[in-house]
Length: 333
Image (tube, rainbow, N blue to C red; front, side, top):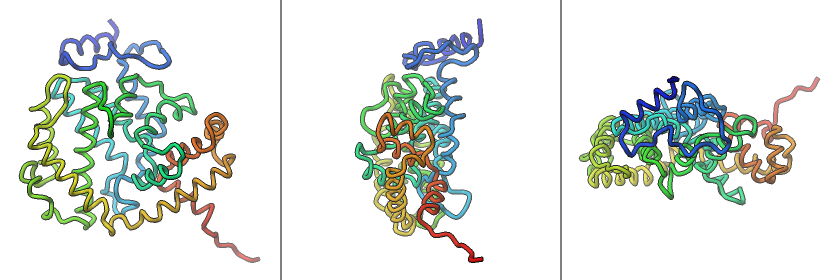
């Protein structure tokens, strides 16, 4: 018995009956020989970690644009924290931790530079609209590996595109990631906002903190424990009391921190940067790399430009804007 088969047998012996078993995957769009060591979801996880889009997350905004200090979250650290929370839940429920991790690591691969401000700008400019969860799926299906994609399993792809809103994932592991994403960003954004001086933790709504706790760790632990206590086969859910407290906390963040003038004052410039880049590359598709020129020919200029800009890091987008629109010093000899 090779290593992969032994691992799949361990899954059969240890997983809950409603877990997503590796040897029952719906497979890949392009069939491949099985790996002798890694089951399919382990292979997907490894492909995601080694792809270019994953590395670019380290220079993409989570909440605060270009913050001073090394302790603020980026899109990459957010992704790792989602993965940690999701894996904890999956392991405790005896579900497939490899599938959970793969979905978590890939869920934000399609996020724009400048966080949701960049996403809103591209959504307005691109004729078909722009949603980062749809773009994350496009990254792994079409853009990675010079246009050939990562050829991930159906279950991972389904979890990626359903991680934010709309229809829930078809697998319990995908549903875990959706909940872990929200638990992570609300609590971690609170910590970053306190560090940035735009939020006093004393003003957090008491109806939320009395239930979930006063600290980040306590609130995350409370939500995880609630999910473990109230989940039933086929349904990933928190208890009604904790769920309502979390909704209150999330609503508070959306009405305060996420619209705070001090924290978000740079976002008004994002619209200008994205709009300028979009207009420029629409008129000069030949200045994009070969892959995006090919996409322009096959799928249209709008699609290629949206792909190109959404893949930029914050720093790359700023440099591109400066090179195109900011005058450079020169010396008269």
